[in-house]
Image (cartoon, rainbow, N blue to C red; front, top):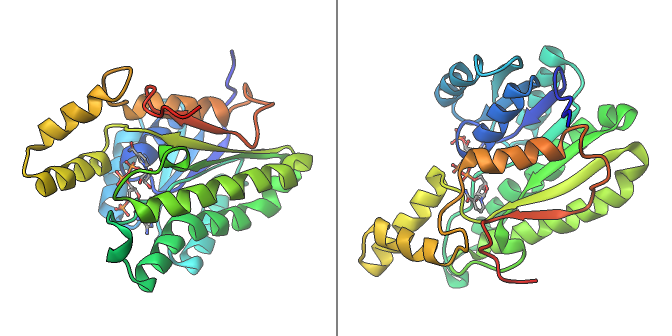
Length: 261
Ligand SMILES: NC(=O)c1ccc[n+]([C@@H]2O[C@H](COP(=O)([O-])OP(=O)(O)OC[C@H]3O[C@@H](n4cnc5c(N)ncnc54)[C@H](OP(=O)(O)O)[C@@H]3O)[C@@H](O)[C@H]2O)c1
């Protein structure tokens, strides 16, 4: 199967670490020209150095805070200048704070909306004029909470399902331009974010993070957390020329964690 990703231009948002970084790495390995981005110039520089020799592709970085619409505009403009028109957009973001309903004010809700849903909308708006000319792929990263809400993560639970509504509607609107829009939803993939959430739970319960991890792994049929590379490979397939008839879908990558049908 030929993924045909060599020379394709990809913008991977929120990619200095974790899932975004793993996706960028996989695409570079397949020969794509990848723009990585986050708020932290130093981390980006380091990530670029790590990724640039892993394949035939290219990697550049641009610092941008995706809660700022002007910085999003600039990010897309610079990507176009450096690599050309964008073929592949992977929307991703940091997770919103954990907590239950009564903890959060209007400001908290608005900032989670900005980070976890509006940023996706804004980046899509910027890449669309070019993508409509040639077709393309949009992947929106969400969470397994699109199927089963996760206790203590009400901000995330709320806006991730918004991503699904957005993506399904866009798949309908953009199919005529051969733009395929899909959601990929991680269960528990071993990144800093997951370690942080496990630590938070451990502190709350007065146990160690390892104990929380062990309990959590027992609920996953494959008996372990996923590796970021395992997640990234699925993204690489869906954004490639090998995937031509999947759009409007939500794919959960969770080792069987989600029990809903
Ligand atoms: N890992 C999992 O199993 C899992 C499960 C369910 C859902 N998710 C969700 O999937 C997403 C990625 O997960 P992850 O585990 O890779 O998280 P992570 O390790 O915390 O990485 C988050 C990335 O987002 C960037 N970022 C955060 N705020 C940003 C902003 N305002 N502007 C630009 N970049 C920003 C961070 O970079 P800087 O700090 O350098 O800006 C970092 O590169 C998160 O939304 C997470 O909640 C993950």
